Image 1: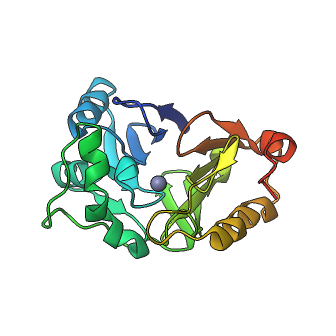
Image 2: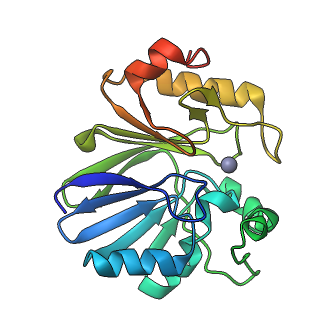
Length: 210
Ligand SMILES: [Zn+2]
């Protein structure tokens, strides 16, 4: 794998996961689905998993994370304000037929605003974006021309704010934070669910992107 990314819709289809690779190393964003499915995919492609990053702590964005982190002995990153959501959203995993988490799962490392090198030649800017959840994050990977928004904004809408820790006021501020970055129009945007978009598309068609 050259330095590149791929959106992966792991079964049962719901969430957009993103595989970012550099040579034979890779990281996963929002590792949804069964850990076994990911393990097979990594084996098939001869990839070494180096870390997992989560946009937020809802079950449908982290289902495979603690299991993969344990199996591969790697770090899983999540903003710690979302720690209380991990066990709370077990019902969501069960509704998809996925195993829920027990109290003693491997805990994620805290991730806050800043810049981190995630793979050789790939730096990532991390932004805190509360609103959909308290610990929401979005990620910008300039070298890949890639923005990963999680559930803060969708190609044609925005994330719900009626779950624990949600706030419409904060969500609007977080969307404004993305807008204020003034990223290039052709920046590829992967949202937590549904279709991907670009900054140009959001500017033109998403009335909430303001
Ligand atoms: Zn969510």
